[in-house]
Length: 220
Image (cartoon, rainbow, N blue to C red):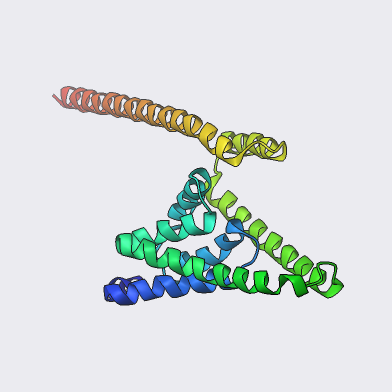
């Protein structure tokens, strides 16, 4: 599937981006985070245009930079698939449905009863479904990202801070120096382990050489 998409003409790739994000924003209700499961299904599982690691990077980036998560995600994926024209096509596809819906709602709003129990029931069901989708995506990201006790501890700390309503942007920015220090620590640890293995291999080789010399001396 990935090769098929990469061999498409630029015009068809732009149309694919526009239509994909048009469907996503037309059918997904609940904000940018609610889009993540659908983006994963379309662009990671089905189209294979993103890896799961790139999806994680996109999630962090789109919540850090200013702007709407849906538009930021569209621009990110569009740039990776077709450059600047792809970013424009994806962003246009993401904007068209909500823009149209808002226009319709604004024109009909005086005639809508905000206390209508059927209308409230519809939105209650949508909110429940969206919450479940976000939880599933969060669990998948947790399994793929958190692989050590230290990372679990960091997740718990940031989880508590998020419950305390600390800004997500501040949390992500605070995670940057931690990530840098963590990678530096891992790199140095691996370097020390490789050095120790090299020295151990050198000692073993010298011991084997000495044993061979002793055996040859005994034969003589």
